[in-house]
Length: 117
Image 1 (spheres, helix red, strand yellow):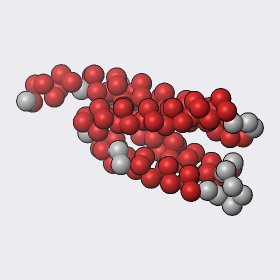
Image 2 (image 1 turned 60 degrees about the vertical axis):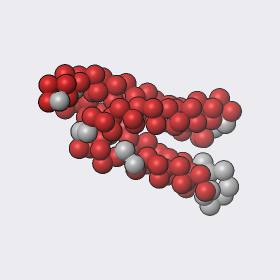
Image 3 (image 1 turned 90 degrees about the horizontal axis):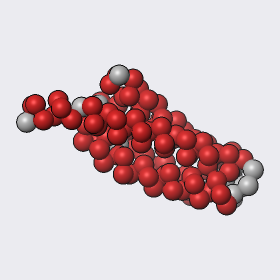
Image 4 (image 1 turned 60 degrees about the horizontal axis):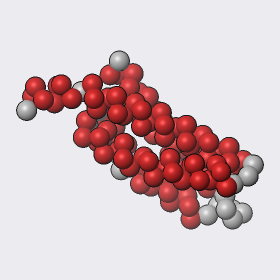
């Protein structure tokens, strides 16, 4: 179960990075040729290595961090049209997957952290 949660978190985070890059670079950028919103993918790299290595603390703070991307996706799904709205819905789904799996992972690994302290 824990391994599956790690895979789900890592996969959803990597997919979110790739979707963010593709969205703002060529799929539905604000300006033709891409926009500076492509830089929104950079902060997603901060928790990536901790998530891939299974560091419980990274899962804990990344749960709060990912809510920024959930909010952006929800707002743009509501306000944008066409491809951009669909990509925003994908962003919302990926953030919900990440958040749910990260919370469950942190909860399940809590007993191990308490025993080693």
